[in-house]
Length: 306
Image (cartoon, rainbow, N blue to C red; front, top):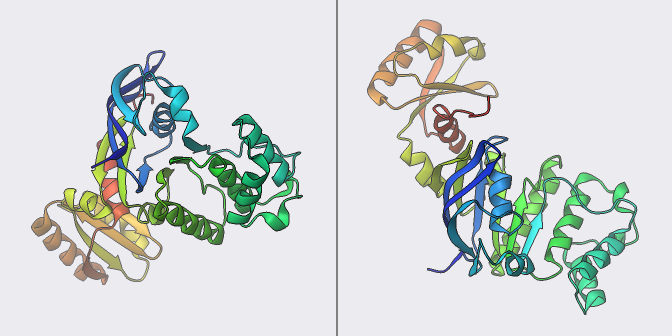
């Protein structure tokens, strides 16, 4: 098995804050790997260490075959990094932005590379539009085009769909899967569970600690959760009552339904069925979702900086 990313024991401190703790991560070539976790969990710091923008305090590993401690210059030549915040120039056109990025990479074939990027991301018709006038979805396309100019082998995408509409998000993910099928490895951090389910494998990090990794189904199965779906008139009014039941570890609202989960299937089943009868609620056994699993993982995670 060949890994595009293979790191272990990676640590990073900022002053007295230990923000990434013994991170171990393996990402296969050509796969889409989802990186999840709450704000401040160390995702962005981890990504920056992997792509050579930050040097780990300790640990070992490789990115695209290059040592993450000593070969940061080489790593950066073969990686495309899309930051969470739009980082191109508002007062340049789309084409001018791409040409400027190509010049920074020292590309000799700038003009055909820019033309190809415009065509591949559907930006040709807008090539003369100022970047500052673009909507969030078009800015996202421009940022991705700039990451792909130098034909990277690895894409690192940090919250790439934050603040864009659902159609733009869907179009973006179709493009991500096209790039994966072409052999590009993609590590993407996200908060959206529907996006996490589009990834081939996942890792969940909380406050510097890696809590789980694997496919979505593997992560859900590892939590050993039993989940019941509660519906009925004013079901949301029963959140606190359900949380007090024996065997209940979490109650999560999904629109007009509640997901009630716990590890003790027998105890939970008896308690919630009796509660449903007493309060005229519809109770049905359901499959735990990826979001149920991640909420369960967070129960014992503590923010060291609170």
